Amino acid sequence: MSIEEIQACLQPIADEMKIAIVEVEFKQGREPALTVYIDTETGVDLNTCEAFHRAIDPALDELDPTFGAPYTLNVSSPGLDRPLKTERDFQKCMGKKVEIKLFAPLKGKKFFEATLTAYDGNCVTVELGGESLKLELSRIAKINRAIEFDFTEEN
Image 1 (cartoon, rainbow, N blue to C red):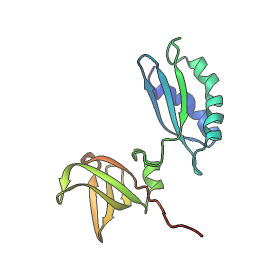
Image 2 (cartoon, helix red, strand yellow):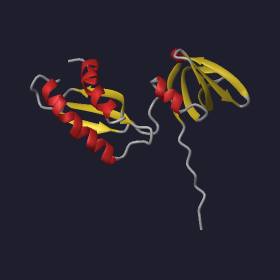
Image 3 (spheres, rainbow, N blue to C red):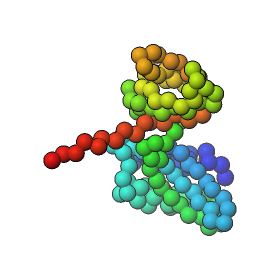
């Protein structure tokens, strides 16, 4: 059973619950696990994961993605620092700081933070030090939202 078939089975349930399926991952081995990473416009909490888990469990039982073999079903948030992969991921980060790791150095650097300003499916454009850079996705090893912490103390 392919990941695409599993996602196609779950998509109508996700759509009804206004949930975006970010990724479906199946890990085989001693303890097989099917993990469905989800997101919503307002983020994901434990209640959202639990509700989606309950909603998709019967559909997966009927689909039987492991042909009768036992597996663990996990529903999770992909995390704040997950790699940007989909059009939706890039749109949500537009105008925000991103971390970029390149396969080969650019101006002597393989890793930098910049502001995401455009995405066209093949390239990203970022603002770095007042300069606009257009990078092909094929040059980028990883791009994710930069996590910024506010350590100011309130009295």
